[in-house]
Length: 106
Image 1 (cartoon, rainbow, N blue to C red):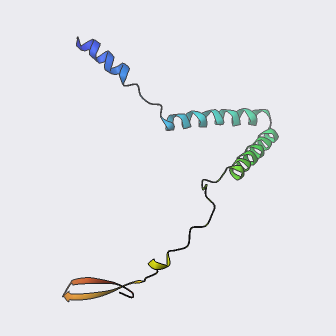
Image 2: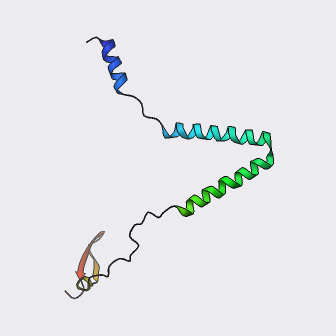
Image 3: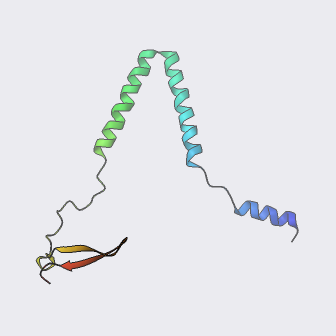
């Protein structure tokens, strides 16, 4: 297979994915054009549309379901595991410490 055919196949197989940043820039540009057009028509219309968009965003945020599916409280702790862990720090030699762990009741 020639180098040109191989390069063409590689270019076809590696199609670039669309960028979220590029999409955001396009939407921002379209919004700027819409705001400019509304301002050219009427400043009052621009203010009213701004209030309407803000209210719609707020309404959507309030009505969005929460991500927590289980609203029940967590189960109570197991009483057999109700032991407190205590520790002591012992300095064996200068600059070196050892931590001794001990469960209460053991």
